[in-house]
Image 1 (cartoon, rainbow, N blue to C red):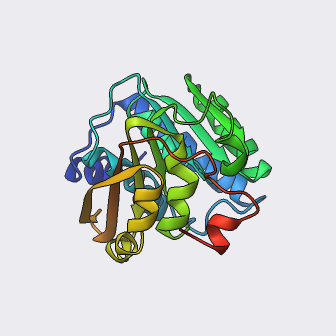
Image 2: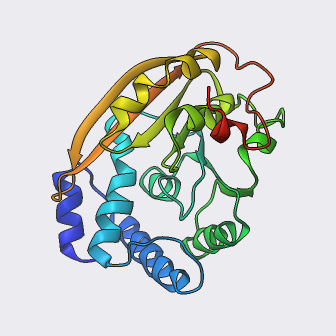
Length: 236
């Protein structure tokens, strides 16, 4: 990958080994190759992929000091963001990528295979089904999501997967603070506590990013997440 990507990473306080840089280069090529077949991202320019997907995903490390063996779930992973960049940056993470569209899961599996990543798996499932499984429910140290859904909906899809004293981090844009205000009931109902909201400008494009950190303080009531699209149609 070109030196400018390394320079941008350095400005963001991130340093990668030559091997990690090579992995991102292969990942970028796979995104462009598969994007011709299925809808992975509307962002197709190299620099934009670097900034808006790779470096943006790594912005999550501004706020977390995750143990190297932490169990992490990326809910609604799509093209693998932020889960795969997180895994490349911190290889010891035990990463689970979840997406409801099988074609995207097929893409993620090829990325994992081509990059030779270990300790990472993909699950083709909806959150309301997956988090009924006792092996998955309230079993993750950290759940992250960059999925495009209002925060009250996203909380219902993600917080049931977080163990007590674990964290959920929602990656939001400029309107993140307003969504937090609308999410007070959902946070409390689902067993969470708002820890902090981190608003900052990221990359040389000054992209506005808001990280919403929710601490899990008590068990999520068993009826959540609700099925039949209720978190979207009738959010908490």
